[in-house]
Length: 139
Image (cartoon, rainbow, N blue to C red; front, side, top):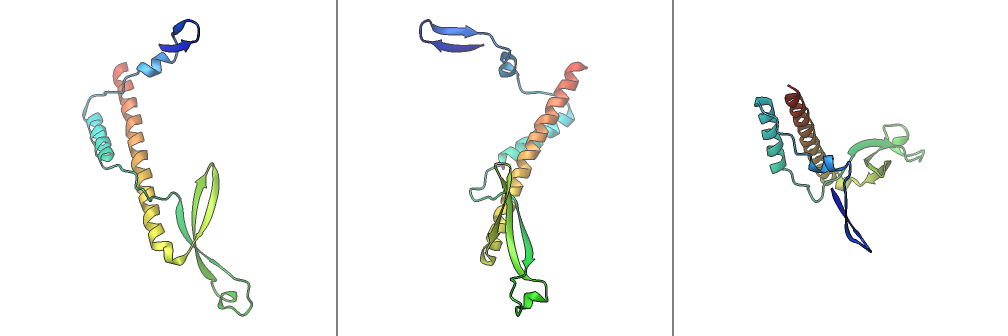
């Protein structure tokens, strides 16, 4: 149930279909599989902290030719260039990374990936616990 404040009559009580979702309790399935999932989930949550300097995406090494006919890259592999590729508002962005920054950016991307993987594992454990609870309630 929701309460809305109206200008003329004070509080108005409204019964809504959303009441089910707001009163839904988290799943509490039983058994060894559920216990393992909950233990793993709590262990992940205990160690889960967003690194303040984490970066999304991936870091890649590419090679480019500069276009000068007398440069060594005209015949060879090209000049090494590092790029960080990530998504912003559903669009892919590519930022070129100076060679001096590569070690730091690699560390920050790894931290971001580890955080993202841990969050995904917690969400998966929640979904599996929900499915277990649903199956146990049917039985």
